Length: 491
Image (cartoon, rainbow, N blue to C red; front, top):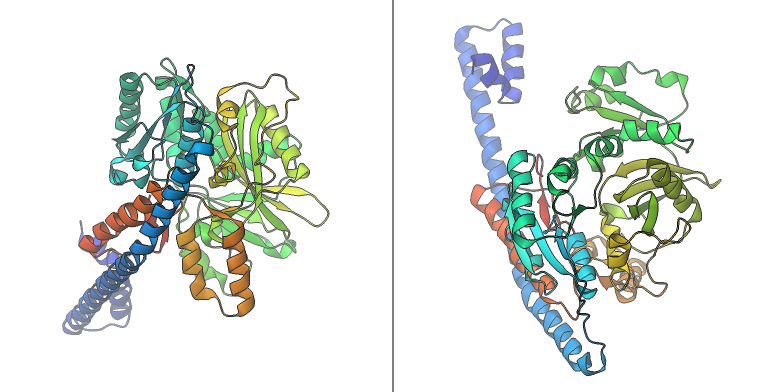
């Protein structure tokens, strides 16, 4: 790498040298400034490592403090299950049980599907990438076997071949990807390879590309006559700066088309005074295009639907929550009608989720489509019909989908809720927090399968933290739902 490349790779050093040269300083003074810049970089790196050290050690300490309470909760849940066993119906042992292969083994939604299929008498095998061999869900009684495969974005062929080896070894009947945002396209690439050996409940690659592209999806939905927001596609920051904002009284939000775990939470509204610096630092390029979407005021909802041959077999809808870790089903006919029309027109078979905004006049606007399962599936934690909804076609095109049971408790993740206690500033907020806890249920903890509640929080997450501690690497937040550390440039 040339000298210019090295300077550019050191962030602010390149700018410092450019300013020094522009001011006509001598080589001696240039070397002096260079040493200062190098020292500043080293100090910054040392500070970052120090923060990472404290962050990881502090979090591990907190988890260690919570461990005894977790053990008590798991023990009480297990005892409650044992005491109630004589009065409880026996587990189903089906003569027509199928072997189900699920990916995404670190995520709660994979655990929920595993439990639903296991309860219906099927055998479930979980898969994750090598990085997440430590998945706490592998200890669930609903999981027959656990495998790891290469990360698809790093080794696509190895990923697909790894899945094929598991399918053939275990004689898998049905493959259902519980995809990460990155993996959904690679699961589509694996479909033709696996289809000769098992049923694949996922979309073809070309369909996945459309659904996963915020611009192409809106174009498709608009072509089908459905309501959509205004959306524009950009491949460089200057295109946004050149946009005619004065010709519109609307506000807009920028979104990366490829999944971005950090910028996805940025809801900065454009235009605003002095936005040039903000826009120029965004990683927008032809390889990673962004969209600018019309900002629409209203209530935001998230949905999940499992569809077969263009017919919705399972559907749930919830008001959106911060970081999407609280789910309570609401019946919204307008949203369901939009979803039903879209999947029927596309004749889809797979799992699809949407984010919607519903305005005061009732109009429904999709703001995002994801060709994969949503964590809202946890609302089916006590529904006996999930397996059949996935595995069986509708008897006729008018057969309604299953939805969460009317008396089903909302779901949350207790360790997320404990962290939220730090933001409570009044008795009213504390009462609302307790109401949410007492009226809902943890998405991981189940009395007949309590071990994952222990192993996710005090095995899976601590081992990830120890890995980052060893590298002196920080992170932005812990997502107990997805089962990972959210990092800049992470998976």
